Each structure stands twice: as C-alpha cells, then as structure tokens.
Length: 128
Image 1 (tube, rainbow, N blue to C red):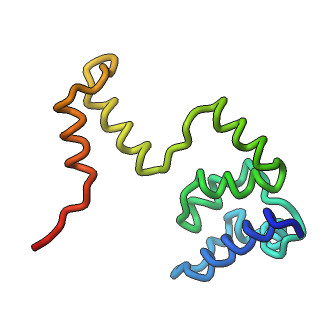
Image 2: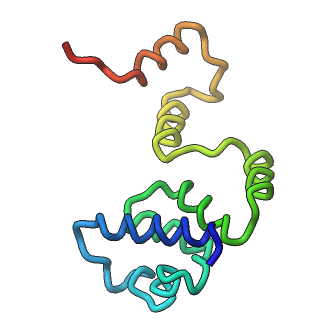
C-alpha cells in the first residue's frame, strides 16, 4: 500500500469510527467495494467521493484530494488546482453563495468598507 493509500484509509477509518450513527445499508459505504477501500485493497473511485464525504461528514474537497493522490502525484494535483482555480472549503463556498445571492447582478470589486466588514464578520468573537 502506498503512502497516499495509507493516508486515505487512515482518514476514512478514523471518521467512520467517530460516527455516532450506523452506515446506511443502501449507501456505497455498505458495499463490498468500499470495504476493500477501507482495507487498502482498491482505490476509492473519484466519482464516489461526494457520497462518502456526505455520509461520514467530512469536507468533500479534502477527501477528493486524498483520493486523487491514489491516482496522481503531488505535482499533478498542484497542476490541476492551478488550472481549475483555488480550492474552497464548503464554508467558503457558502460565503460565496451568500455574496452572489445578495448581489443585484455582477459582483463588483469589494470596497474598503466591504473588506473591513467581511474581516469583522469572519473574526471569532472574544467573550469577556
């Protein structure tokens, strides 16, 4: 088993162990193929990453990156990221969705006030 497969298998097994509810019997996670993934015998199919991430409650992009490392080296993954744009977490995508849904048409470059407001919103609040 390669290091990339070990990292993916360890991540999956750790998350599944933390789950408080059983794996749905009709999901890919209950299949013999997924059990072979957990043993490191086969690679996690990239088209199954979204389903697995949603069932075990992990960030889909992080899991996709781990799964992609089974097929591609780090240089290829970095090339994909440069060509396809900066990766975003689910939370960042939710922020972007809110901005786009609040905009009336195309989104303009943020003003100084908008930048300060966003910074104030994302900083954690300190309780006294």
